[in-house]
Amino acid sequence: MRFRKDKNKNAKHFGLAKCRCWVAMRTLNDLMPGKKRPFQTTFVCASFYYLWPQKTLKMAMKIFTEKQRFNQWWVWLLLIVIAGFVVWGFVQQIVMGNTFGNNPAPITVQYFALVIAIGLIVFFRVVTLYTRVDVRGVTWRFSLLHRKEKHISWKEITKAEVIKYHPIRDYGGWGYRLGSHGKAYSVAGKYALRLTLHKEKKLLIGTQKPEELKRILQQQKHAACC
Image (tube, rainbow, N blue to C red; front, side, top):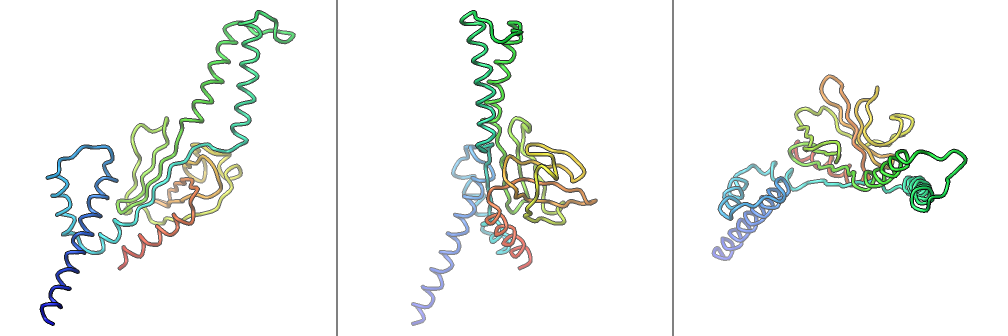
């Protein structure tokens, strides 16, 4: 009986160690994606992670990630209408040699308008808002605006909450906004993560997964207290 009890106890500790090492390697891959590391480095990092306290382990297991783009149907409808009008005028006047309208635009203006129309479509298709909430804090990047990720640690944050807001009324729309309410990064929707920093500075990051983000924030808060 004693042997079986010790065997079960050892199996339990082995399972916990295996779980911790697995979480360590997964967290390491999430924190440094795409980087090649030898097996020895991963093993050492996992070993150090195994020595971390249980509270840190609980917090590291709770990670929120989100990738957002401008997917509103009315945005793309407007872009297609504008681009279609510009392309039609370009084909009529430049390619076919017909006059387009009562006062045709110069050739340089036609080329410029075509480049702008195509550029807008590419811009709204490529621009992406990346968000990550983990044990280190909140990390985000607005592609084509930020070359590197922006990060705020939990020590700099006095309050983090998911709110419902009015993008047009509060910030004048979506995208990168700067006003009396502070900085805002959003691409769609009416939910956002609002961070209150020291000296009452505020930062708003839009989200399409408010319930999941709420749950992660609650888990991070509970893990930090326990």
